[in-house]
Image (cartoon, rainbow over all chains, first blue to last red; front, top):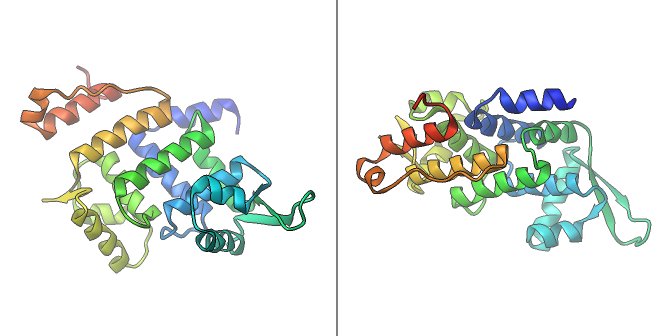
Length: 186
Length: 54
C-alpha cells in the first residue's frame, strides 16, 4: 500500500472505527475464527515482525508453556497462517514465517498503527488486560470495541456487529463481560 | 441498552490515542467529573478526540 493510501486509511476513521476494523482484520488473518484467542493474534504478530523466528523464541517472548505454544503453532500452520522450515544453522530448530491470506490481512491491520507491530502488540495487550479473562477471544474484544465506537446501543444492535456465529456463543460472551464488569446492561 | 464500563472506556480511549496517533492523552476528568459521572467523561473524551465544537 502506498504511503498516501495508508495515511488516508488512518485519517478517515475514528479511533473506535479503527479498533473495530483492526479486530476484523485479525479475525480474517486467523482463519476467520472469532474464537481465536488474543494471545494467538500476538503470536502471529510477533512471527510477522520477526520472519524466521523459532518456536522457542516466540515462546520466550510471549510467555507461554511449551504445550500451549505447540498447539498454537500447530493451529496457525494447519490454517495456512504460517510456514515452517528447518533452520539452516540448527537442524533441530524450526523457523516460522507468516504467509498468504493471513499475512495480507495482518498487513491491513498494521496499516492503522504508525508503530506497526509494536502498536498492534500494545493494542492487543490492552484488550487482554481489560477483558480480565483466562483466554480472551477476538469476539470478546469486538464486543468491547463496538461499544467503544458506538457508545450506548441496544444489545440486538451490538449482536449484529459480530460475526454471524452461533447466537448462544455471542450471548455467552456478552454475559461473561457483564459478569466481569467490563460492560453494563441497563 | 449495552454500555461500556466508564473506566474501560477511558482506558481504551487513552490507549487508542497512543496506538493509533502516537500521542499521550491527558485525562480531563476531575472531581467535578467524578460527581456528575458518565456524561462529563464522555464530553471530555469527545473534546480530547476533537469531536466536540467546544
